[in-house]
Amino acid sequence: MSDTQSLQLSEKNPVLQATAEELISPENAYRPDVDIYYSPEAYLFHVDLPGIKEGDIQLEIDEKNTLVLRAKNAQEFSGELLFKQVALGNFYRAFHLSDDIDRNQVQARFENGVLEIQVGRREEIKPKRIEIKIG
Amino acid sequence: MFWTLSNTFEEMDTLRREMEELFNRSQRVFTASGRNFPLINIYNHPEEVRVVAELPGVQKEDLDISYTKGVLKLSGQRKAAELSEKSVQIRSERKTGNFEKTVKIPFEIDADKIHAELKNGVLQIGLPKAETVRTRQIQIQA
Image (tube, rainbow over all chains, first blue to last red; front, side, top):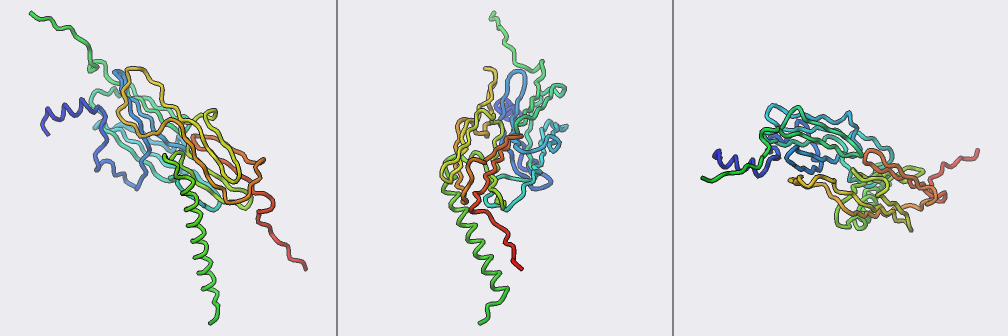
């Protein structure tokens, strides 16, 4: 891929899903549903993690700007299982973030089984409107 | 031919598996109402049936639970995030909007005693079985 192509790609998709290789977690894992938004100030992630304890969620941004989420649904239910759709066990998701993220502006909160992650963008890279004079 | 013990157990196991399959099939008919939300598990207890439903991001006041003639209905709304106009959505996997799911309960239920709890995005509903269908321990007379 040429530099131009890769630049175009990163402009169109500021958040890319990590490649298949990176998506394979150490253990077998489920894929939680994710919504992603971006604004001039930040990237925002909403992840469905119902029934998971806050202590069972691990979140990191590694040195390659990859946001990695690991979680474990360790709920225990008693009784004879008659019908099953709920996934219990490990969850994993990873996303490549663009280079303009501000590592000092990362926040996460967990409410009603939804994890919200906010990753700030650096001032200097934010697009600015400029007037161009001709002449 | 003797009806051996192991044969009896095999027969019982086959019967059990067939019952399970039948139950799953009946649920499929009832749960195949388009979008698969919420996901549910159903557990059988001697005293009650418990339904576990995953409802991340759904507020208590946006959720409606009803039980009529052997069918439990979960309906409600999952609201989309309220964000500034400058926000652009670049990935959308979480379903929002109205949902409805019906579950056929294969036991007679004491409807007045149904109880529900919503915690961490998980709804747990307990449906106590009617006295008439509960398993009873039989005391053997001396």
